[in-house]
Image (cartoon, rainbow, N blue to C red; front, side):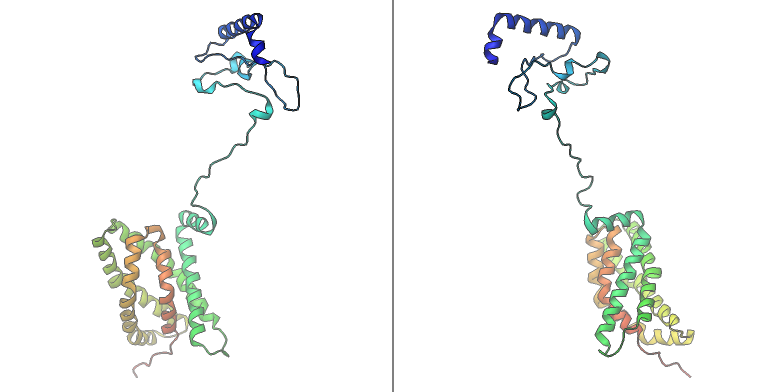
Length: 273
């Protein structure tokens, strides 16, 4: 029906006049196409004549930005489409995305809370291993360990990893070995001393008793650390970004903390009379 309509000479002449008038009023770069029949509703069987939408707009609203903008607008049922908004960051989903966002917004607080939670879990695991089934959990001891992890270890891990990453910004083999040596000779021994001193002080031990404990427990603990931490430090410094290094180090420290909390729970060392 449409083909026969367009072959009519009168219709072709009218079609030409409409094109000419529209071109004079709205000069554009692309050819003008007149759609004589546009079906707006599939339920209606009788079509009617309708000009494209952009020809009926007012001149002050008509803006030419690019030829690709010009397209025929059909009825509302065909022109309406659901717009989808792209995800801003695909990786930021679930608990991992939430944690990464917290590290970015509150780095010290997030790492401190993470360290406190790991020390809490490690101490409960240590008590589960060594205690008798009839003995209750020592939650005061667990609170001490959580306080150490949150107040002392978490913030110091943040500043330590940032310091060594600025001192040796590369992650090649040589820089990784330098970071490992610094960790085993400086940070590790210092934090072990702080850990034993903090825990002993919270248990009410005197300065003399703390020194005696350090003499008894410090060297065996450092020797055990030399056998455990170099591999963990190598993985952390070599393959992990600096903002996630405290989390990975805390994850490795879970087993180490089980051992540390056991050592810290030993009886007081005998002092020289």
